[in-house]
Length: 294
Image 1 (spheres, rainbow, N blue to C red):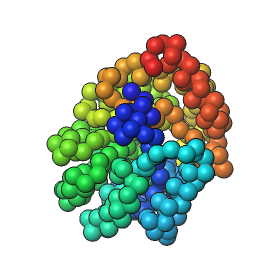
Image 2: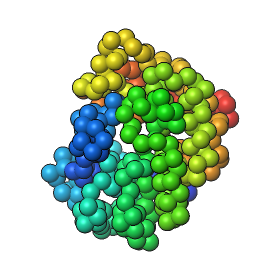
Image 3: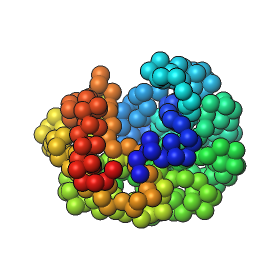
């Protein structure tokens, strides 16, 4: 099931994400595991479309909703507070509680969504998320990217696959919905290897998946390898076909939260076709319909 359909069925109206920058860092950046970040990650920690962390959560939500409302016809809508940039459980629980509670106190926020790493969910953070989940739904988005250790090492992920499995188990046992991020097109991965990752995620006990196209962004170590000619990015046609192959593998009850992604055009090096998100989504929807997947 695609996300828009799922949200309408669950909430009875359109629901939009508001990206929030909570001022977090990451063990791959603060020296705990590494200081360079994941090889694909920009200086904003995948939070290119969120505000500066100096802006309060309340103001970030207000500003985000105003931007969205400008594009909307009248009608009932709701919002997801999406803590996106860097690792959003990687802080003392006192900070987490302050930021999360400020977000859900806005009556327009219907879901708290927290992007993090499987190795950065302390028992205290899990307990906090469990308590908030009794007030408003909580989603935890885990950055897995791949199940293949050679790729995980290349991208400097910093944890082994069993750590992901354990995080999914702990979150699920706490009644929290889990969404897993997968990157399609990692250097050196074959078509079958990418499908193996998606198949694994589909049967790992999660409720949702994000299929993310590999972006090469200026200022990353991935960009250095790309400019050396060490790998090529997929064409749009290859990517569309791959995504549809992935969706065919997934159980019907898995919610597909993303089928592509649009990197910040000001720092996007490749693939440039990804900058035309409407065109990509139209191509994806066309092939999905042809395969009777939607």
